[in-house]
Amino acid sequence: MAELAEFEEQRSRLWGIAYRITGSVADSDDAVQEAWLRWQALPDGEAADPRAYLTTVVSRICYDQLGSARARREAYVGPWLPEPVVAAGTGAGGPAAAGPSDPADRVTLDESVGIALLTVLERLTPAERTAFILHDVFAVSFPEIAEVVGRTPESVRQLASRARRRVRAEAPRRSVDRTEHRRAVDTFLAAVMGGDLEGLLEVLDPEVVWRSDGGGKITAARRPVLGGDKVARYAHGLMRGFDPATMRVVVREVNGAPGLVFTDSASGQAAVFGFTVHRGRITEIDAVVNPDKLRHLDLGSLGSL
Image (cartoon, rainbow, N blue to C red):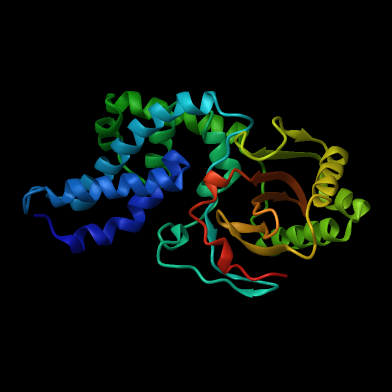
């Protein structure tokens, strides 16, 4: 049986690959578990390069998952957004505990895992997405990727190039200044909680896009809401459905950048908001409210503002 220690050295990296390819916490967990089972069954010394072997195994599992998932997502009610990864951290209400199963403990969060970019990756073919993630994010060679997607190395090079051009063209512009990003999120939260419509309009880009993922299980906009005025009024209207006495809200790291987590003990509803900020204004808001996509989060451990 292959060594457990060698697998554990790669676990976080494998989970990071899986999440970026699938956009699903549950599918990523399943892929890493399946890779572990295959690793256990491998005779000692069979894999000369454990890192390369495990990368190929988990990538191929995710590539197959992605192919079958596309049919389900085409029938999905409303916009499809990835399952959010919420890191433990300190918001205005104090620290939130993160258990050992928290995905944020297993993946290095950066721009490549932002909700907005993962949404762009949904528009790629499974082969393009896998090639882009493996080559551009994890520096896997084209011959190795060819084994995953069943193409020639030259074909994989073209897949990655095509995906790269599309990502560059469609990925939202974003601020790399975390202080600027946090300031915009704080301003948005204060305006929403205070019912300050003018304040919302000031922090929202005139061409801001709001996407809501309710999956047909929670009432949510089934089409993106476009424009500062419409988004401000939409956000303002949403808050009327929450009771301030039972609602809690915290600022947390959502897929690598400051975001918001709302919970309402009265209705049992929860929402995770990811933000894209450019030049001090919010250009995209991604709201995940589908309860199936929030099951992996320990919402009860979050402090309140």
